[in-house]
Length: 139
Image 1: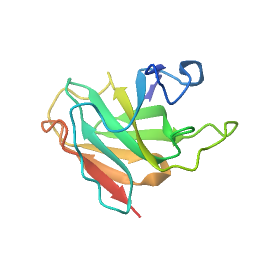
Image 2: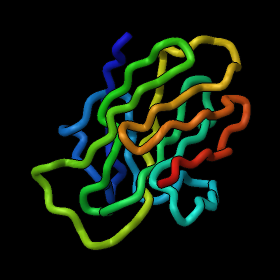
Image 3: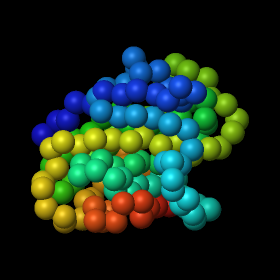
Image 4: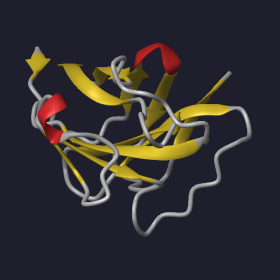
C-alpha cells in the first residue's frame, strides 16, 4: 500500500512545505522533549512518537538541506521510507540532526514492533509501546 504524505516545516523550517509529500512535519534537531544519545557512527534513527500511528525519523547532515522523509510505503508491520535531500538546493557544511515526524494512518492496530527501512541509511525495529525510545542505524 502506498501512503501519500503531506508536510509542513516549522517556522525556522528546514524545508519548504511545497516540496514535500503528505503527513510529515520537519524540524531541526531532535524531537522536543527528548534527549537521545545516538552512537558516534549513527546515520539515522527512529522511535515511536506519542500518538497511535506517529513515528519520528531522525537523520544527520546539512541543516540547510537535510535528508528528510519524502514518502512511505506501509506493508503490515514494515514501513519503507524514501529519505532524501533536495538535489537542487545547496548544502551547508554543518552536521546536525533533523527530525521528520510522520503520521502513518495505515498501520495495523496491534502493538507489534515495526520494522522501518530508512531509505539506504539502514533498517531499525521500533517498539510502538515505548515512545521516545530511539533505535539507531549505524555505518
